Length: 603
Image (cartoon, rainbow, N blue to C red; front, side, top):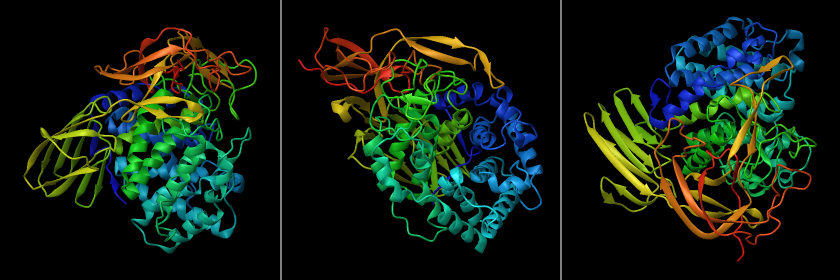
């Protein structure tokens, strides 16, 4: 397995640093101050939720704190970890659950808290954490082996999540119980290969087997478990991904799931938790396999689906995002979504459910840490975003505005020999290296000698083009960016208290009410790319860093039957009802209200 760098070795620069600072100044950096389920959690002696929400939040908050080197945030993270560790029982059990209730306690959170502890170790290098993880999982193995507990519900569906911490231990301890626990988890866990037929036809029925977050996590199961299970790696993730995408895929590389798999309709939603979990799966899949397809899929999700479902200031988020999303207004009657409430697509503190409120924070920090991967004496730039790396005498700085343009300047200094590799995406065209045109390639390799300094100038071109979508619709893509027709909107703010949870500005709820027309189709095939400066908000909904001008014409699209704020799944007619218009398409992540999948008009 290739290795990720820690936040002490890799630091964000440029637009990525801006994005992480916005996150720290928003809900991610303040959730422990404003949200009862974290502030008053049973994990730290309170009376609020004592299951997944504090570990979820810490999973993103900890690397964010260390990437920004924010002393206050690091201190707050340490406070939570220190309390949790101090209250670990002598037998190793660590979750806030009375002993007699453990058989009924869904132990998926054991996997989650041990994963968080590995994250904290990588950031803090606190060696005492290793024994904490060891004792937790040794106790967990004893409980499963004795039959006192077994996997059920979320633990059964997410059995492979335990392997993040198990792999961490296996690198340090070659003890039989680690392999025994791996075997038990596999035996008691869900067999996803037996479920693929269920993924081909969406149902208005909630099941663990079609739950979108479970499936986003599941993609990495073979990658993280095959070594301890002593199996050969078969790239089973590709088989499962292909089926899920064929029957449920969206233009931005995610699957519909509101909350369970929802087919190919552009008006079905995708839960935010699945976005950040799919990113994490892709990050680990690349780390294990080195296969560039996972890096390209990671970019597609990170640069589109993640920013689209977060407000510009990152104080609020959606539970469900939609590809064609003409309004974010609560449904007054039944919900459009298959198994989610009618407020799941508004922007708020915890629309629908609070799991995404807790879990969304890992997206940008872990993506940042996936920029460079090390493998022996090789260092690979996997995701070419602006970062600087310092690795025991090796320093690499990457200046770039990618994905908003395709120019890269690498400054490399080293006091040891190593091989530097730059991944080149499959969509790159007309590659120029240090002023010279070169043949298309999947990667560039540079041997670096001790004492050597290098500057590498790289650029390539990407052209906007149409991509076929189901139902005769098209979408526009350029490189890793997908483009949408933006819909102007005004916000309607709601401040209130429900179930002892306060929604107060800036972490209140908002409906996004459309103020411009959305019923368009593509009038012809012309597309013109324009690059702009990057504002203080990289994925700004008002000042997009890049646009594509397309020729559109209004059509009689119509509304979905029974709804006043949802466009029909497919247009009623595709003949133009107006003149052609030159309209700027925004990156999907900038267009909070949008039409992404549209037809060509018939003339």
